[in-house]
Image: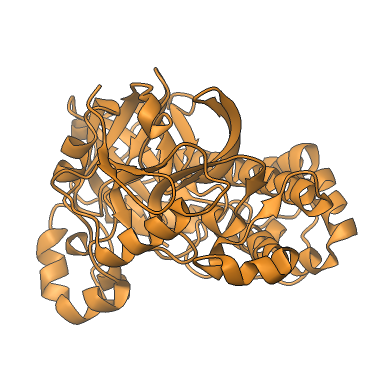
Length: 407
């Protein structure tokens, strides 16, 4: 398999699959800081969508021995993608897709959502009763155990957020594949509760390191050592948040399917079981290069041999269903998307609404100032990103968006 570009550092090397999509200086500095940590195993792997991120570099894979870095996992714990294929084809869709977008927007709360207190399992508004059952069966007990130790977590509005999309680059899309079959795809994570868990443990890691914190190349790279209670609690909490995120996507996808089935001029159809439901901000125990380690994928998807994943483009660009090749040098990983080419502030300054309308002319989506920071031009060229990681994945399906609901 084609090896990644090797970058030597004062610590472990960096291996980067970035040919044709260079690493920005601020992202490279972050990566070099991570590579200097004594807990990093073998090397740091870098995906072609790499860019600077808060706490740690987005598009990086960091294997560690005997410790975990909460800020490397980040605040959107378990953020990821899911997709289903339907029996609909392009010819089954109406010429006017605005009612389809409206139906999805009504079915999936998006943007900033909030609420006070906890909802009873049987009274979830426009979120189905089954969501309450999922909460009871899979999530509530684990959360209560965490709250017993960290009462600050009770302030989260996690129950309100179950079944909601969020803001920023989170989205729901209706797509067509190379055979004009209709797919539904969405991007979201653990919402407010994941953010709170991350914030609590990032600060905890900084406190636990004490004087050693000053020796780190970046204080955000503070870590929790295995064998401590705080390490055990974080692993438990992050695992819970990752499960919350997975179920959150499952719930929303079922609501999307139901909403579209009720939209005007849509014939009866069936949807596959979730074809893919994968994280791209998470930590997991794996075995690499002869050692058991904790692999943190910050904006990266597991791409073990045969693993299915999703690499979305920006709104208006192609997206891809991929199958992993199990490349050991990437720690069996691939990119999680196109990756930002500029900050949100830069995008808003550089592009106009007319630019955005032109770039999304084939997509039923918002075309206003509120989404200029998500315009396709704010992201890297997804075709270049895919070429750079041909050694990591093979393309199974190529999707193009026809409807996009932004958070």
